[in-house]
Length: 318
Ligand code: MTE
Image 1: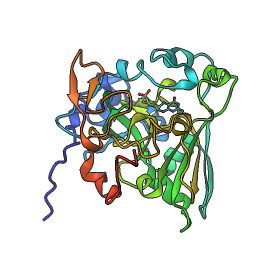
Image 2: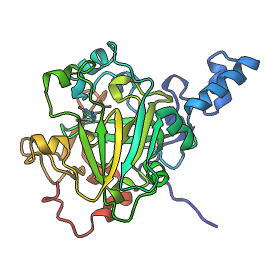
Image 3: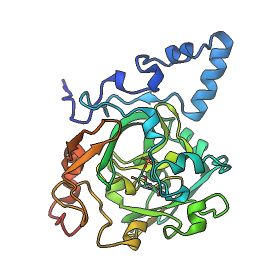
């Protein structure tokens, strides 16, 4: 018989699902709590299922030691330069006329089966959404714990059927100067670009989020779909993706273009390699008062990802 040892990033069932319905784990209980019954319940369930919500909690990605950050903090302290450089701006500016519906995403490049689909269609093809609770560590030395809803990135890439020459994945955010004050100002080179090695993208932890706390992802957090790679600094978690392209060349990500000495391609969380201007040994916990905590190697996901970097100099490949 196989006995599973709980891993260091696993959370109890009670720690996920919508924040207000924290203690309710079953879908029917969830809907009952919303005051839905009988035929209305069936109709609401069908609708929720189409959009992938409420998602199924994935018990494999929970850590009893992690306390999810409050929804209010996760959705009001943001980095989304398309909508301003101040942490409070995206919540305001990304909800002033920018629409994320309908939204098409393509998977293209070195693949045998290129895809161009509406985001709801993608979630359906992925078999609906699941919820995972991950640590998020920004390169600016703050951190949160987020219950993300979505699907494993490897499933989407597998659907596109990569060619053998494909070695990297490039992700691109929307470009729309009319909707994005940051793009009008040119506060970064746009569109925002990020990249992973293909084996990093296929790692079980790499995730596409379409929700937070069991609700569709708010605009300021990267609606309608964003990347989540929890062992890397937050800037790798590109928001509002329109294109996923498989290539044979290592992509130049936006922050590397802007300041290569400070921001690299790998951006693995590493408490031993400081940012040129500040320490990465500890982090400020958002919603945690004045408290700081020690930063963990690969943000606590060493067991899952360390083997991806065997033999690599992580000081050089920062
Ligand atoms: N994606 C886009 N398109 N534009 C951005 O400015 N900021 C990144 C990342 N993804 C950013 C982005 C940075 S620096 C971080 S720390 C995370 O998003 C923040 O995600 P959050 O606002 O959901 O916490």
